[in-house]
Amino acid sequence: MATSNIRIKKVCQWCGNEFEAQKTTTQYCCKRCAEHAYKERKRQEKKKITETLDSLTARENKIIQLSGRDYLSVAEVAQILNVTPRAVYNLIYRGTIKAYRLTSQWAVIKRADIDAMIEARPYERKPKATALANDENGEAISEFYTTKEIIEKFGVSNSWVFAQGKAHNIPKVYHRGKTLWSKSHCDRVFTAKPETPKEDDWISYSDVRAEYNLTHDQLHNYVKYHGLRRRKVGKYTYILKSEIDAILRPPTLK
Ligand SMILES: [Zn+2]
Image 1 (cartoon, rainbow, N blue to C red):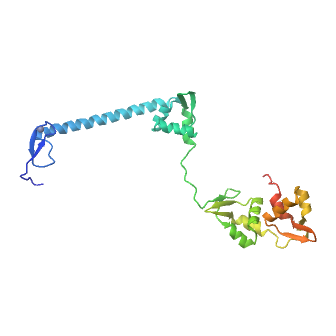
Image 2 (cartoon, rainbow, N blue to C red):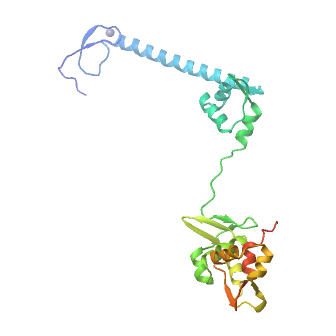
Image 3 (spheres, rainbow, N blue to C red):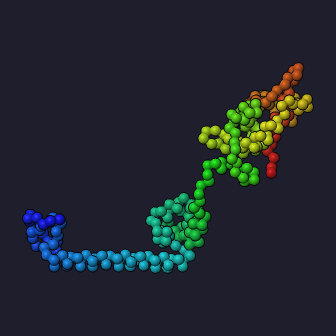
């Protein structure tokens, strides 16, 4: 910037005397004042660095000292984790870290419990959305039918899908408002359903009632609710034994 003829009245930032400056950015009246100010600035910077190093060393020493202790206060745990005591209390209230209260004002934390808390929570990537469910061998299931697809493909009722799903433990997952059923399991369970039942596949209402200790109304409600196939012979109603068993048979222990 070229020097202009403009003279600006300023106060020297070092000696406090008034002077006429040629630039608005000039802070000192003379070279000597500028040098004094520069030296003072450097002194302050050096002092600040020393103070920071001292406080870091103090913190390090404190942590080294704390590392040898089996029991710690909340404030000390906060120092070790480099958080506020409030954050440590939040971990305690949430049950993430165990603390022992000796009096209403005095809580202690075991050093070992901090290590256990940290080790119990490794940072893990969340499973991908494609692995929605696992089969009985722990393998991820990748192919599914919706309930609607099963109804259309196998010609069964909605309630029959759920009844069979329950009876055969077909892995299912609720995803984006739809129930998804493991494709391979469905193919096994639903194609196994006999298209034309044999004569002795049918069982009378009275036999089912005797076997499962049901009133006529209770049985009738099951049949209606699950959409079971019925056959009337004279005044007797027959249903398929396999279908009612799938619904009423107690779950088998594995
Ligand atoms: Zn000056």
